[in-house]
Amino acid sequence: MKRYFALALLGLILLAAGCSGEAANCYDSTLDPYEQLEEAKRKVASDGRQILLQVGGNWCKWCVRLNRVILGDQALHDTLDKHFVWLHINYGKDMHPKSKSFLEALGNPQQNGVPVLVVLDGDGEVLLVKNTAELEEGDGYSREALMAFFGDIGWVIPLLRETNPSGHVEPAAQ
Image (cartoon, rainbow, N blue to C red; front, side):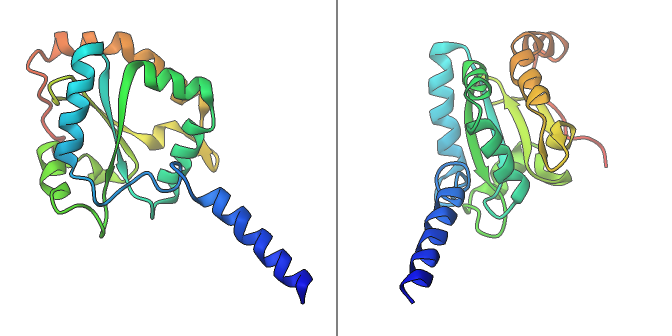
């Protein structure tokens, strides 16, 4: 009986280690997305980075996988951090009451599925919406594709500003 208890306890510990922490529980339904954005805008005002919204939920296995890939690879995480302030916007049944209007103001980037990456400038204007299906590889995400996206965005953003000086992006026609 003690052996079964020890195995069960070990299983719970391993399960908790694999499913807890920032990678699996990064979408917080108690956070007001407008407040998150205002805090991020203050941060980028002093350092020139952009804002990266990852829209998704803890219920979404692809959202959790994306977090695990980024957080599990120091070089990838450092590249993301060099160019962005990274926010997680919770989407789903348990989302913050203000999340619906927040996402509508962004043009409903989640309309084609989650996770979706939204790049904002320092004023909170949408520069780019990235479908993460393009970054997938097998049952996960391509490290190379993510590294290219996070690293190349540094020179792409000035081009986006030149082609769209207002910083406003209209939602795609349905």
